[in-house]
Length: 352
Image (tube, rainbow, N blue to C red; front, top):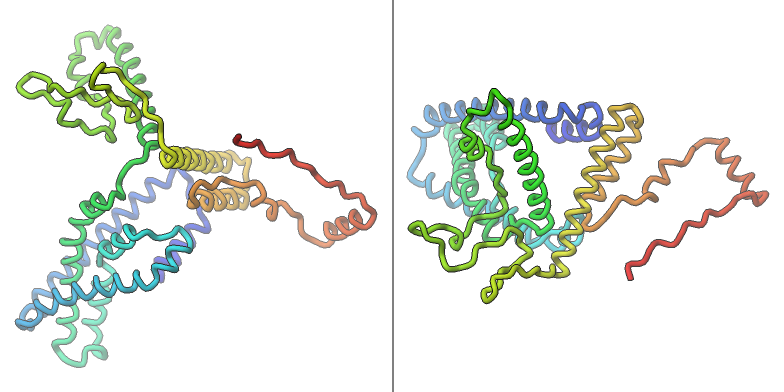
């Protein structure tokens, strides 16, 4: 609960931390968490080796694996019970995400801390063997989930195709790689003409500074076998092209409707993220107040979480109203004497 309240406080006071300081603060707390987890697991290992292991019986290890399976069955049953509600509320829930939620429930430092608290409590452990057994089974579940679930979650995500990159993200990465490569080429040409760097090994520099696109994986057709290229045509640079096997010409592929929607959603997310950065810059320059940037960032994050949703201006109308007796009296007088003029907005453009 303390961590939950800390997260809510940081979310409410997000303007206290400068955007420039977010990454150093993140690394600082990440290092503290790593050190705390290390000390905690070392202490648990010492306590288990001294107290739990001498009191273990033959039935404890089968009970540990039975408890491991039971926890996953209970977690899956809970998700199946609330699946109709979770599928219709909030972000929605697909069956692939439900499987990942069931399998990705790793146990860690929180469960170990609670087990240590039970181990040290004389009122909860009225018998000598209860505390060590609870600590052993809790630490065993943590070990099994980290070793089995933690190492196989990546393969599960790839099997369910939840890590696939959309066409819009691939195009953004291609544009970024092209821009970085062009900048690198211009800087390299400039340094090659510098008199103190003319004797440098520029072949080594180019081989070390090569920028590769992580979304393009070299296929078997493009690899050299015995110094000779294969007969199959090489993979094109862009994913929206195909090489004709008869004339070797590059043919453009028209994106499907789902690909258009994914590209539109990726572009929408990029625009919203750019607006959030712009809000932070305006707050640092003093053109936005703390309350204003809170409202803008909250609305931007709300629109970012909804598929194909954009920031709407009518969401800010409630924050633009002036409250009090005199504004209320002025509105009553304007309505009473017919001084109110209705605003007519232009019709939105059609997509025909």
